[in-house]
Amino acid sequence: MPGTSQVKRSTLRQQIADALRDEVLAGRLPAGQQFTVKEMAEQYGVSATPVREALLDLCAQGLLDVEEHRGYRVHEFTIGDYRDMVEARTLIVEGMFRRSVATAMDSTTPQALASVRRRAEEAERAARGGDLDILIGYDLRFWRELSGLVGNSYISGILERVRVQSWVFSVPYLRRAPDLRGKLWAGHCELVEAITRRDVRTAEEIVAAYNAHSLSLVDSLPGPRPAPTH
Image (cartoon, rainbow, N blue to C red):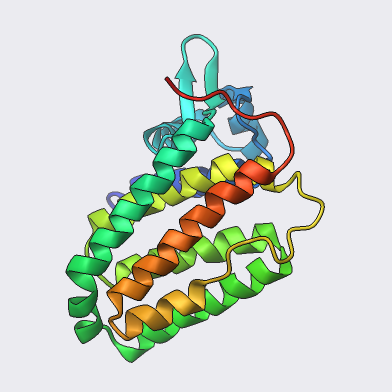
């Protein structure tokens, strides 16, 4: 069938990109670590072409840097970057709430809203239990589905990118805490209920409290502070 090999390669490329992104998110590929296409191709047992394409995709997402004659390097975000990420995701979400939530709620199916609620419950349960690995996956899915209600793929894509980068920065700090139970933000269900009521003001207050919590939590954790941006 014409194009079958291209589809398979594209699928493999995405699988490798997703796997590597998960490694970066989990901190198993830490900030600053260098590697080559050859090393990753051998690790995954595939040819160099889909690996190279996957790595370029992750560069476009801001997670990797290309180093001339050296290969690739996991990008190192600073505390200044993180503060900018929090500000960016705030502006994105506030704009989404103010302009699109009412319309989205009018057209959202009960099934879609129920799915968002399930993601919220799962993320909240993981947050309260201090299970960081489970929380990251459910939290990303929650925000992906929530932003998807608006029906604008550009908004969803930008928010996803910023949220992934936020987790990449904060995970190494969070892992230094001996016990995260009761320390992680767990307001997912409260936010869904506010949006369901079309209560934009309360939703914005919940998000503002969430962002303040994120910044204070990272600042409170042990370890060397990243250098500020200039």
